[in-house]
Length: 571
Image (tube, rainbow, N blue to C red; front, side):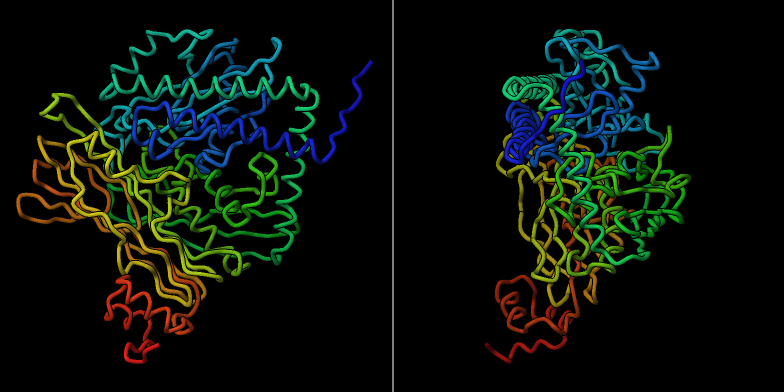
């Protein structure tokens, strides 16, 4: 006898969908609360999800995880399944947790370390639970792993294929010893490792409870139905876009080694209820670390489309109407041994920007102008002479969002790729020998438009004691985030080093590494503002009055950006 099909009423389906999302949210919260590193504990640079047992497709991810990890963890699970089938990774058993950070196996850059747990129910392998956390250091040329001048992946840190860090619930001390021997401040990573594993166990317990409440057949039927509905909703959104091909191009400032821009060429073709993204004509693989692996390129397209249609559920069905081609032979499909430290943090955002600019031609009322488009990656590593302990500080910062048809862009918004936020100044000053001398909006950075762009961030950090090495991998230092519908570009990213009474700007503008700074030296960063939306002459002069009165722009800046504005007009 065959089991009768499960019939799901709409209410039960909605409850199960919310419960799956809650399982992922609880994993995210547990990960952040238990983590040692501020980049996870405070900045939330992590994500958790549930993946299908047979092909790794995404079943659910919560609202609290980084969107860029949606597609990468799906591909990472698929690669793990393939390697197990080929005998190149150990077969799963209850209590196992695999660790992997290989960027060419569904990854991003080496600092994003993935843990994968096979989930069992009543002895049957049902699905996979996976999370990704940004480790502050994985070895390599410079503290923090963001090597702006790397020319091969080995220079960026320790690369791990899928191996079992936990075997039947017990950590493998030999593998752990290898990891600790190859990274800085290794003793501090133990807290992050335990937090990452604990988050998966929280998901394991919550998912077990959910299956017991509704039965395994019901949960499986819900997974299939939710995927079908997500695909249907995404196709409905796409169907409303006029048929045609819409082109755009964006540029990465440089690769950190060769001081020339990298081009992303994109042609988006909409036909019926499907979108095809063709990157033919993009720059070839580059020498420096601004290459993107294919998993990150795909995920960047997925997250950009979801930015435009945010009501689409986070599961594999939402990706079904989206196809991608033209990345072969470009820097958007990095192969070993190409360096990739700027992959997820920077190149991904320029890919999303290309999607926004292309679809703005088709549906301008639904798309914003370009956001800041950089994570502002700044790493500082050294030894604190007071404690005698080593440290690696990783700082990320927000920037301006682009204006849109309805309102001005958000200021100091998180990066395009996620929900990560800047760790509190007080926490950073407590954990590291630094002092924030300045932290404010990057005034004047929002691009002009009928709706202006939001403002970036302006901060300055002083090293209080000892000696440290600073590294940067940022972008939009050469080209500001572009506006749309006649709007102007946002201000560019600026990095300044104040050392020995002198100031210098890196040759690659916002990419450099291994800069030695001493007590009293300062690092100053100004992140980009968002692009403007619409003809600047159509902006209500009273809104310009307001922005000048609040100090967002000087009168001179306002006159240059909005020539129709007259401060003596009043009102």
